[in-house]
Structure formats: structure tokens, C-alpha cells
Image (cartoon, rainbow, N blue to C red; front, side):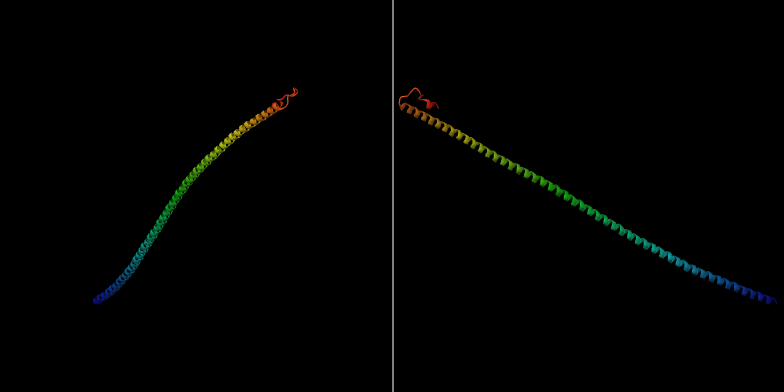
Length: 190
């Protein structure tokens, strides 16, 4: 009976040991499964983290590329605007220069026209003065000739009157004796 008890005790301990071993094995298997699941979850989590990091890196790269493109576009726009402003300033400077040149040309043209006008007026004045001088000289000549002819006429008239008086005096002397009624020189006194 002791043996039997021992056997039973051994069997019981065996079965209890097996049951504990099986339970331990089940726990170990559960731990392994949980570990495997945790490993899978950790791996999935690591993959998600890696994918998230890659997505963030891709997003950051895309953002950098976009910002780079935007900065490049802004620089191009700024450069284009600067060049356009420079071109406008250059054209404005050319227009100002051309305007000053036009003003200077116009002033020179006006001075030239004024000079020509003054020269023409001076020439006309000299011509008019020469004409007036010639007319004055002609007038003086005419007056001199008129005076000369009048003096000649007056001299010839006087000579003619003297001749007439002399003829009348001669006729009066040739006529018959005079009467004292009439003055023989009466005709000469008229």
C-alpha cells in the first residue's frame, strides 16, 4: 500500500507535473504568441513609423522643392521686374535726352531764324535806306533842277520883259512928238 500510495503520489505528481508543464507550456506558447504578436505589432509599428518618416521626408522634400521653385519664381519675377524697370528708365532717359536735343535743336533753329530775320530786316533796312537816300537825292536833284529851271525861266522872263520894255521904249522914241498929256514911259511902269 505504500507503494501504491507512492505510485499514486508519483502518478499524481506526474499528472500534476504534466498538467503544470502543459500549463507552463501553454503559458510559454501564449507568451511566445504574445511576443510574436508584439513583435509583429512592433514591426508593423516600426514600418508605420518608417513609412511616416519617409512620408514626412518626402513631404519635406516636396515642400523644399516647392519653396525652391517658389523662391526661384520670385527671383525671376524680381529680376524681370528689375530689368523692365531698368529698360523703362533707359527709355525714359533716352526720351529725356531726345527731348533736350529737340529743345536745343529748336532753340538753335529759332536763333538761326531770328539771325536770318535780323539779317533780312537789316538788309531790307539798308535797301530802304539806300532807296530813301536815292529818292531824297533825286528829290534834291529835282528841286535843284526845278530851282535852276525857275531861275532860268525868271531870268528869261526878266530878259524878255527887259526886251519888251526896250522895244516899247524904242517904239515910244520913234513915235511922233509927244504930248504932255500922256507919260511916254507909262507902259514901262506897268
